[in-house]
Structure formats: structure tokens, C-alpha cells
Image (cartoon, rainbow, N blue to C red; front, side):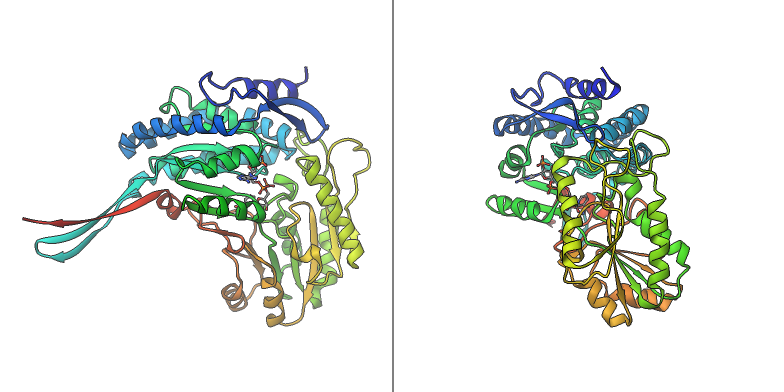
Length: 484
Ligand code: NDP
């Protein structure tokens, strides 16, 4: 048995007997670096999900009765358990998702940070006092919803399992996680870490397909709050299903993010940012905030593109378990084929493929693709409009700021944007005009805990990673008090 096989079977066999993980049918777990099956996950059904909801409701009542301080102390303990096995869980994510091990170690550390950040905010889920008359006043109080369904995308499995549980748990809710069927292992293992620490049912996982397990969570009347991370089409389906029950839904959806490069920049720094902004090293470009549309001033476009291509070509592609590997395979075959199709779409639309878009030499198995750069991209092309969610960069050019803004905003998405310039005025004027929920000025990819993250337009509803997220897992109740 290989390390990968041991890892997968350990992950899928450690759930407690009374969790809904005991589904009778299973789904295969494929290592995208080798295309081999390394284990299975339970294919939970609507009945399994209903059982998880029952347990969550019961556990959630106890959890909500704790003081916020006690809840946060327990979550900090959970963070310590997580830290003890962080390297192991990072390896699980690498084997399961194909993301480079260095990126997954970063994710594991960041996951712990999210738990600590929200645990430090526990006392902030509080209400207000509203003056009225000498004998009358209003107060508001914040209550948990009860059960929160947390449906997550496949690209940062552990980070999402931990980071996206933290705020709803701190607020006093029970959380049922539904990871992607393609990368469920680390979520299962994270939930196992909570055994004996949090009340039974407070943190659980349902696995299986989105169409069955995910949809069952959205449709269950006992889950009043749904938080979804994924693509726009699925987000729409979730909203429609939730509408039947008038649920509170927040959505973190896709992006087709512009990186705007003014002619006055430090070109080497901007080109390097374009590569790291793609998140190739953390998730092979499978990132909602990937800087997949370079909007470069015409006067520097050639030199910028040359530098970009040199940097992209120098990336080390290979077995994602290797410490020095920078780009791994895409996470699953269906998506790999989709991204390969986009390479053909770009070529057939008339864009120039300057580099990449091929299976790397010497890597005959696994869902590998050399990162691609397209130039001569017309903004109406599909590669300029649609989220590819992979290692494909399009370079577009502009000559005046109005044209640049039109290009930047001319897509259905509005998640992130990056503006590179030495001029504070240019940076601020551009930032004010960009339809994006998050803008980096002379930066990319990383953001400190506490900075809200969320999309405009079709990129989502709501923000995460901040106090607002914590409050978003509470219902505000108003009380009028009359002194008699
Ligand atoms: P999908 O939309 O395909 O899936 C997201 C999650 O929804 C998965 O767990 C999936 O399960 C589940 N799901 C699928 N169908 C349903 C349904 N009918 N009801 C309920 N749940 C369902 O996204 P991907 O996993 O492919 O992730 C990529 C997308 O996520 C990109 O668009 C990316 O931009 C976006 N994303 C956004 C982020 C943000 O913060 N804004 C962060 C990360 C990613 P299963 O996989 O088992 O089918």
C-alpha cells in the first residue's frame, strides 16, 4: 500500500459510528497526480443528511447554551488539535486535490489562523441599546440560527472546512459541512478532530454528490442558514432551492479577475505579481481570485508579456508532494478536460497561445497542464469572459483609463481586481471605478484576517473573513422594554 492509499483509507474510516458517514454506497477518491483510485468516500443520501440535521439540531441547542467564552475556548482547543496534525492534513489535501504540498501547508496554517481570529471575536456577536423615552427603550440581541449548512468548493479543502466553520460555530450554531465530492478527505479528518471536544452533532460532515447530499442540505427545512462557495450556476441552483424555504443564503462565487497594469510600474515586480496572483503555486490556478485577465497598457504590453512568459515557463511542474514543486495537476479529470477545451477555444477564437496549454514532457499520467498565456485576446472572446478556473492567463491591452475600466468591468463577475501603478491618484481613481468586492493596489493573493472578502455582481452575496461574517451567522432580535 502506498502512502497515498494509507492516507485515504485512514481518512475515510475514522468517523464515529453514529455519524451519517455510514452510507451504504461510496464514491471513488482519485489521486489526480497518478489517476489512481486511492480510497472511497461515503455517498450520503437525503436520509443521511436528515439524520445529520437531527443530530446538529440537538447538539446545537447545547452549544448555543454555552457562554461565548466557553465556545471559543473549545474552538481554540480544536485549533491546537489541528496544529498537531497540520502537516499530515496538508499531505492529505495534496494527495486528494493535487495542489502543491507547500501551498497546502500554507492552507493548514491559515486554517488555524481563521479559527483563532474568529475565536477572538466571540464577544462581538452582541446587540445594541436604542434610547426612546425615560421609561421605554429598545435593545437588540443576536441569536444563532441553529444549524448552518456549509457547502464548499474543491480547491482549498482543509482551509474551507476549518475557516468556513469558525464564524458560524463561534456564533453558537451547529455546522454541517458538505465538501466537494472531489476533495472530501481532509474535511472528514477535521470533523473527526472535534470528537469528544464539541458536543455531538455540533460539527459534522456529509459527503457525496452535490446533486444529492448538497441539495438535500439546502432543501432541508431544519437548516435555516446556507453558506455556499462554488460556481455561479450552482449558486443559482442553491438560491432557487433555498427560495422555497425562504432561507438566508450567502454566496461566494466565481471570478474573472482583472489585473490592471499602468505604464509607470516596476515591470519585474508586476510580472511576478501576475504569476503569484494566479495562485498557481497554491492551487494550480484553480482559484476564485486568480488574476486571469491581465489588462496591460499598450506601451508596456510586449515587455510585460515577455517577462510574464519567462516566469511562467520557469515554474516547476510535477508531483505535488515534492517540496520544490510549484504547479501540480488539476484536481479531477472532468475539470482537466474542461480546461483543455478552453485552450482549444482560445486558439479557435483567434487568440495567440504564446506558451503552455500542453501536457508537460515526462508527465504521462496525471491531470497536468503547462500554464498557458494567450495574447491578442479580444474582450468578447470566451477566454476573456468565462471563468476557466485553471492555469490560463489572457493578456489584453488598453490605451486610456476609460477603455481600461470598460474592459475590467465588462464581465458578469466582480470578485477581485488588482491595480499596479506608482501613482496614488491613478490607483485610487481606478479602484473607485472597478466593480469588484476586493481590490489590491500593488499587491496580490494574500490578505490579513479581518479584511472582508466577497463578490459584486454575479460573484456573490455577502462577505466573509471579517466581523460581518460572524454577525451574518446571527439573527438580530429587537426587544422594546417598557419600565412599569
Ligand atoms: P461547484 O459549484 O461545482 O461546487 C461547489 C459545491 O457545491 C461542491 O461541494 C458541490 O458538490 C456542491 N454542489 C453541486 N451541486 C449542488 C446542488 N445542486 N446543491 C447544493 N450543492 C451542490 O464549484 P467547484 O467545486 O467546481 O468550485 C469552483 C468554483 O467555486 C469556481 O467558480 C470558483 O470561482 C468558486 N469559488 C469561489 C470562492 C469565493 O470565495 N468566491 C472560493 C473558491 C471557489 P460536488 O463537488 O460534490 O458536486
